[in-house]
Image 1 (spheres, rainbow, N blue to C red):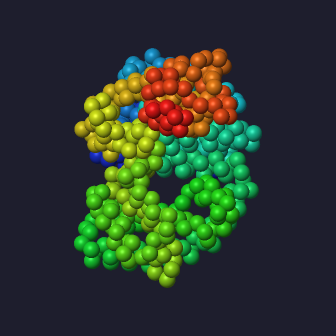
Image 2: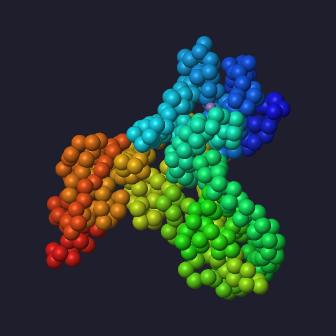
Image 3: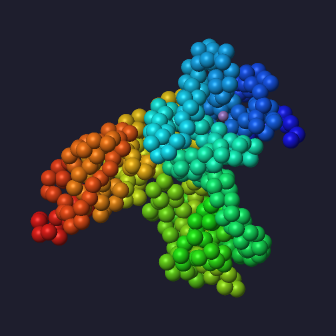
Length: 487
Ligand code: MN
C-alpha cells in the first residue's frame, strides 16, 4: 500500500476560522505525535501517525475545539511509547489535554468479552462521559478509523472488534445524536459481521439506485419551482442515500420482505429551511401538490425521537406516481441530526421538550452544546468547562443485556421496570440489583444492573406511588389501580 504522509494543512483546512493559538497548539500536538510514533507501523503497513491524524480529522469535522483535536492527535502516545506518561503530556500540553488522553487510554484498555464486560465497558463510558464527554467523542473517532482499516487485521479480531462496535459504539453515537458516525460504524460492522447479507443488500441497491436518482432529479426541480412560487426563500433542496445497515433492517421487515421496490426512502429528498413555520408551510404545499401515503406522515418536530432527532417526514405519490420520501427540517435540526450531541437529554419520556424551572436550566445547557457544536469560537469558555453538571441528576442503570435505562435521581426499581415496559412494571414481583435480591422500592444508583422478576396477573400496589419518580410509572400504576376499582 502506498505510504501517504499526513499533511497538517489538510486538518487545519477543516477548521472553521481557527485562532492563531489553535493552529499553534494543533501543529505542536501533530509534531509531538509524529515524534512519539516514529518508526511505528499500522497493520496496513502505513506509518502509525495516519491513525491519530484521521481521528483528529473526524473530531475537526464534528466542529470540536482545538484541545480535543490535539488530544485526538495524541490519543495513542502513552499507550505506544513507554517514555511518555500523563505527567509529560501535562507539562507539554496542560492538564485538560493530558486528562483527555489519559481517559481515552483507560477506555482503550477495555475489551469486549461477553455480556458482563460489555456492561462494564458501557458503564465506564458513561462515567467518562459524565466527567468529560470529549473523551468519549475521541474514542468514537478513534473507533471509526479502526473500523475503516479493519481489513488489515486478523480475522478473529475483525469479528470481535466489529461486534463490539455494533453493540457499544454505534448505539453510543446514536444516543449522542451523531447520526453520521452511527451510520458509518453500523455499515462497517455489518460488512464484517454478516458479509453475505451485506453483499445481498449492496446488489439490491445497485440497480435501484440509478433509476431512483433519475426520478428524483425531476422531483427536486419541481420542488424548487414550487418553493419559488410559494415565496419560500433560502431553502436548500438535496437528497440523502440511506445507510446500508439501516436499509437492511428495513428490508427485513415482514411487510417489505426483501423487496427493495417497497423501500421508499432509499434516496430521500431533504428540504432545509430557517424556521419551523416554514417546515409546516412546505409540508402543506407538498401535500397540496402530491397526495401523501396514509400513515406515512411523521411529525418528529412536535414529537422528536428519543435521541432528539427532529424533522418532518412524508411519503408522497410524486409526478408519474413515483413514491418518494421527503424530509423537511430547519438547518439547526439538520446539524443536530448529523453531529448532535446529547441534545436528546432535554426531552422527557413522552418525547416533548421539557419546561419549568430546573428543566429550563437543563435546556439552556443543551442549547449551549448546540451553539458550541456549531463551532462558534465565543463558546470556548464553555467547552473548557464541560464537566457536565447535567449528569448529576440522572442515574444510568442497565438491563442484564446491557441496555441503558436513563432515570431521574431517586428513581426506584419500579421506575426501572416501567421504563423497560409497562407490562413488566405492572407484573413486577421483585428485583435484583447487581445480583442481590432487593425490595421493589429500592432506590437505584448510577451503574446498577437491574433485573425484574414478574408474575402473570400480578397487580401494582398503591404503595409503589410513594416510591416512583417518573411520571410514566405513576401514570401506569394509577391506570392499573383504577381498573381494579381504586380511586
Ligand atoms: Mn487509537
